[in-house]
Length: 287
Image (tube, rainbow, N blue to C red; front, side, top):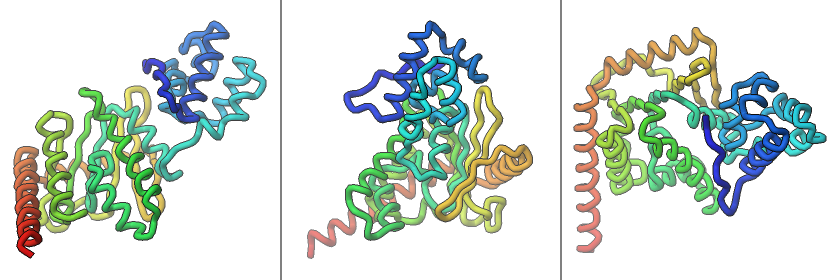
């Protein structure tokens, strides 16, 4: 069960909301399990609300006010508890990433956000919106980097990514940024924190041509699939959809290079980008 997070000097509205929920629960003499039973959720669910991991939903806010007799506090302040720095269609995905037992990403175009370095992320944001203000870019970048904190836990989630080789070959941010990005992925593999495979360009037609998706499994909840399009995305728990995505991922994994061969390709590409960056630097010095 998640332990209550220690609030930093600048807690978010969601953290403050969770802290108040914990305060009111303890004042009522209830354990997380006690409150969860009355809200028809698990004690760990309550712990996640108190830690600010989960966003409070309206039905739970009403129940909390009723059970804890807080005169509508949790309903009135629900907006703060639902705040997220992420786009509306993606906010729940980030929440579930933090709760997942395993995550599998299929990446046909870009390095997945969980694995992106700052330079790579900055280049992606700038390419998508060329006139966005610098402070907005930095805010978006910080939010994306914050997601990677799930890797601070050495055991979970179990993370597996399959990269189309085009992701490795496309020089997002230039050769220096790409070398850094590929070294970051290789480092996570060497630390046994992730599994990475590369689907070679020579494979031709393959099962993942419909686009990117993410599969997530949980200890006490059904698996989810996330599919994304332009300015939109959907979290799906339909068993038929999850089964189809799982089969697609299995087919991609079977067609991809082995993890060892994939690591060798990623590291070789990083060296090539480093050499290209060095050559450019020499040319600038000579000029």
